[in-house]
Amino acid sequence: MFEKETFTVQLTDPMLYDRLRTLSTEYDLSVESLVNAAVKRLVDDVDFVRSLRTGKTGGA
Picture 1 (cartoon, rainbow, N blue to C red):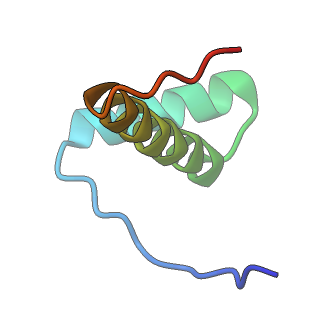
Picture 2 (cartoon, rainbow, N blue to C red):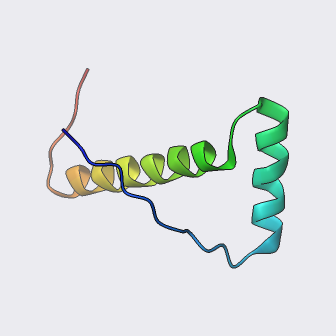
Picture 3 (cartoon, rainbow, N blue to C red):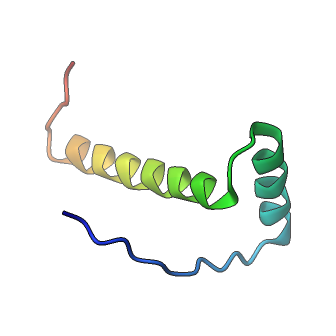
């Protein structure tokens, strides 16, 4: 179905990486899974804003 692709995300803010590491430890999740969740949330939010611009509503 989908091929798994691996790439590197370079964080330019050291404090952001520290916060990711802290969350990773606190919630027993990998930093990679937190980054994946954040990217998914960003993409979903962009899709939502685009749908608002076009006048589409994603009602429940």
